[in-house]
Image 1 (tube, rainbow, N blue to C red):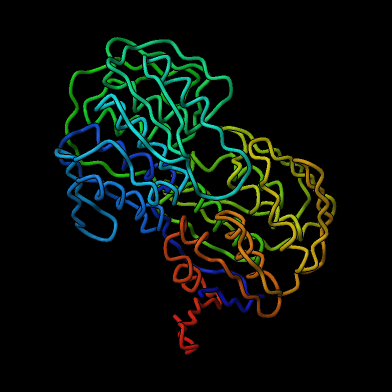
Image 2 (cartoon, rainbow, N blue to C red):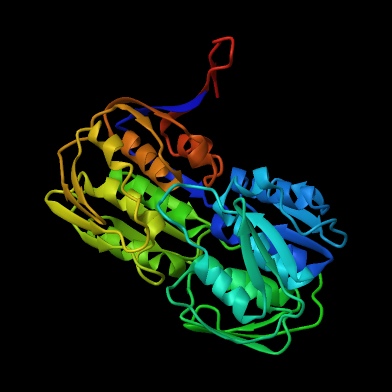
Length: 427
């Protein structure tokens, strides 16, 4: 069993380097299949979701060579199948990107229904709608999704809802389809643009990523390339919250400030002081935290992945805050854990009302999912006393070296392992 042991009550002070974007990496790695060639991917975050993607590629016959901690050479020239192993595909939600990549290259793909964090129903009907428009047929058998097409042809696709996953999967399937594909009502997150830029670097013709309409002119062949992934917007936002909630002063490096604007705007209204530089932001706070009304929305709205983190921040605000979750149904599962810390939150459906308290109490906690787990870490850092957080595997799916990075900011946090012989090992 592994857990974090956190002695809270200390402000975070210093500098922290942000890793590559998880949400871009887990789409770009499957996209290397389309190259049928060697790709070098740089600025990869060293997290378990990236490891799971690499395991899938290796199991399918890709040759993967680590160049350094954050760079891989991936040769997808010779794959020996179009079916992703069931146990591997269930390990994370983003395994469904292998559907689009394999369909785009081979005209067929089989992947298990996605796993990952339990945030409520995650239908892939919009993914299948795009595949169907391009000429594919789909079937679900024993939890496996099978898509096949004798010939992919470009078409117009209007998504019923804005979906990051469906937007990316449609791009992957369409880049080598015959003719023009027009995707409307698409997601506009920074990692959508990053995936499009990667596809173009491999020889695709994708235009309009970051707007409401993406146009893709199919090409006959793709090729290998070298590509560096953008910094992680949500990891940066997490450390921004850490600085604000602890009353610290942190320089957050290797970021794109433009990507952080929805987060920056809310944190400034809550009382944080934020200075922007070319590729870094400094976050500090000396005054009180102010209450907010926040609603999560597709980009450029406030990101749903930041909702648990801003909620934790607002537990210490002087007044009443209202959080409305506009994306996922189950995103308030962490509230029961916060109740252990003396927090006053009432949840009705997708709305949470937070009455700020003077201080957080240290408590034993359990991470219910990735972002809620990160939020609990920040709450524990702000609480006086010792908190222990279990189920940290959720957190390490998306945060590289979180213990080491927080230690570098002066936090008293340790990763504790209890082997089978009950001997304690502290890292």
